[in-house]
Image (cartoon, rainbow, N blue to C red; front, side, top):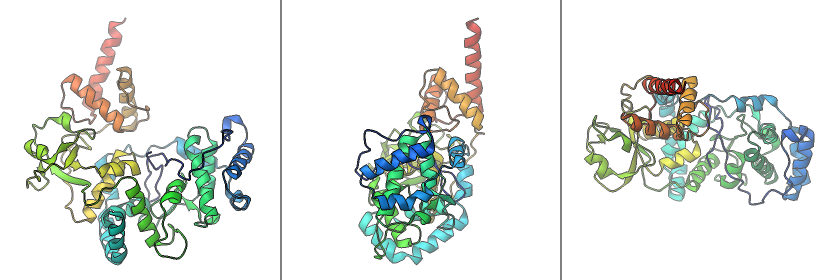
Length: 416
């Protein structure tokens, strides 16, 4: 499942959580959400269910002072409007030069740990360090919210109760396993903790004790955090010795409909289309499958992305965040700064919502009409571009929106 709701290095993260990883299924009589009664009544039912699923009374008693309702958390969850920024805006701020320099230095500082991690999990150091940078600014900003209160509030609220109730079970299991004490569990508003901001279910399943002190401590122990992050990425399907993202240069006559994350072609085929490396050198003409990603359309930056990029999208299902994280990792690994190109102006938050409504009325699946330019909306934009005979680069522009408004007005007029 997609991850994330908010990171704490001054950026917000797209929502969702890992599936319940502890193995114990919730009882048939699950705790209701807020429409069924007060928080106190909900919590009493939840605690009984936790006991039935093997969580000790002592653990529940230790957590109890922190299992409080916070309306502010619910308000944040209902008001997320983060990734209305374009890729160039977001990456320009988050893939900053100081993060690249700091990442390079930390790879040297923890060289022995990174060498061992790469042998064991197959994940390169720059990939881990880029998440460390984006999620908490290398541990400098891990959040300020009480995780147990945040998760309990979101588990009680009906909007996403089914996603946060399993997280609350696993938060209690972390306490029972002695990984964390309740008062240590401070992180993002969505309950993520540690230097790479893991949700409790991720923490419970993937955290490892890499410094040998008997605890899985992703808040204070850098070795534990680095290895646990690698273990999680490996669990999401990271492929050893394979790339994740490469900046490329594309010709003006490319068949733009091929630029789609659902389309994989061998690099030899992309080379035949005229795609080159960003510096003009030829692509390897091998059979390694890759997709062409144009995060801001055919006039903006261009990347070939590989199987490992899907791991980024599982870490965070925001295309803007995932592309930024993958790009930052290449920069830390030594790649040159990207070529921004000259993309057209993007749409505002309200314009994206209007576009989504128009696409939905035209019969296209955009998912939720939420103002976010997600993968489903991009797919629908591509279909509309093909319908209009436009270059199908999946990037919506004011011109496309104006054309759809006009078509909608004409259709409405013909019905009068």
